[in-house]
Image 1 (cartoon, one colour):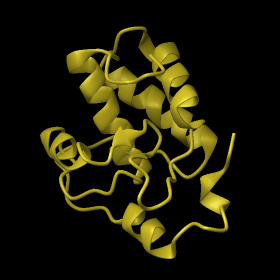
Image 2: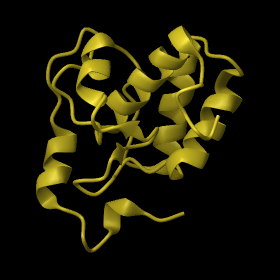
Image 3: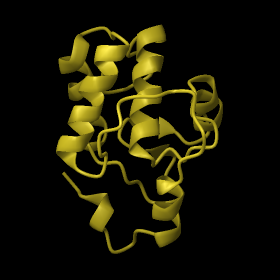
Length: 129
């Protein structure tokens, strides 16, 4: 698994955007999302809050397959973050699930939006499902 967070082509600007935390109506599940274990813990917390088909095992399996639990994606990638959301669809999806204004590279936002989306629609939007 490639660790994008230490990639030499990573952009400081993109990392700074990922760290921005605009106001969100969603509270809880504040685990650190900068490490693989933190990402896994955050996924488990989100699944405990919003049940998804296949439970936490499926949520972890999809995240592992999609991007190896890595939050960072280089600027310009068409799919972004832990759950590889479509960059084109992210703004509307993030807003619909309480994370308007968040960068898709923000691990907490990426995970919380993915889990809520899977809760509502299942895992069909992910090729790894």
